[in-house]
Figure 1 (cartoon, rainbow, N blue to C red):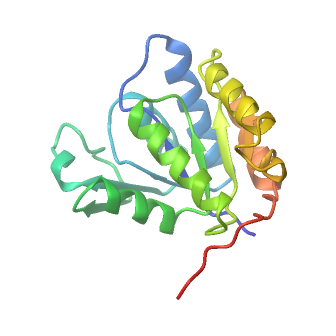
Figure 2: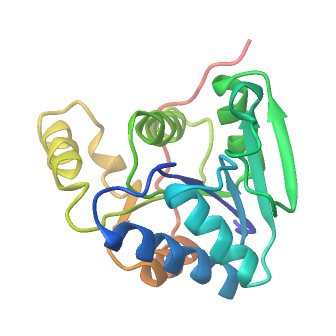
Length: 193
């Protein structure tokens, strides 16, 4: 599978440490250096803005997908290569999933977790085989990774999906791992009428 566009889920806030913004910008630079387009939520602020600005500064193509209710001048990044408006958060997620060849989550809140788990669940039931990664900065995702390990150990996540989620703490290493990764096949298949 050739990866050309990476969907990034992350906070529209900067978080409580400069580490988050610095790593988000480094991740954007790594995308641009590898000539990978960015598909993201379209924001100008927080980690979202840092990733997008770094890709733009690196000469990359940035696709912002923004729900109409959030499409205010102060929210949307002013230098997007493409700006898509959706009716709601559900359509936004669907369009991002359609446009991206892989997905990465940086630190964020409820929206980031919703988007990440939607892509993980879709992969688990065989709706896609796109790589999924997690940039774990400053131990932010340690509790989540502990929960995933417990869910695997206790039989709630199939053991064959242990390698479904790539986890790295270095932005450039995560991009390299993403490009080399072959997601495991799902044991489940979505039944279509």
